[in-house]
Image (cartoon, rainbow, N blue to C red; front, side, top):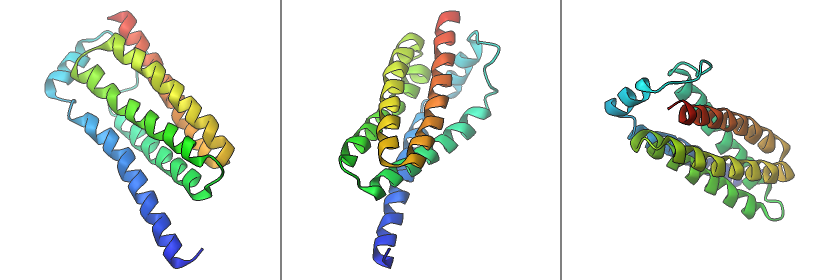
Length: 160
């Protein structure tokens, strides 16, 4: 790979990482003291992780999906644009969840959104596997976390 191509590739990786992290960071605006107070009053499943786990896991997840998108972009196999479009859509759905859950306290509707979000992440995972095995694997890890988060969301809804 030529130096110019490598620089361009690193810029694309940087932009994908920043885009992913920006989605996560945008949700922080809804993590107000009132939102935390409301969240702490909710009945929760016994297997709910401690609060400090979520930002760590989500940060790693956002980095993983950015790398996965970059790997697919770099391969540029046939129809890679569709795979990246699915990735962008699942990222948008991801970004809508926090405002719905924490900002508007819509536990049921955030779960409904989570179902669509998980379905889009599954589609993205399948498409990514066709383009790059490691990209698919990274998306599989992310999908596992989404399913776990969706299960938590479901039980929050049922318990509250």
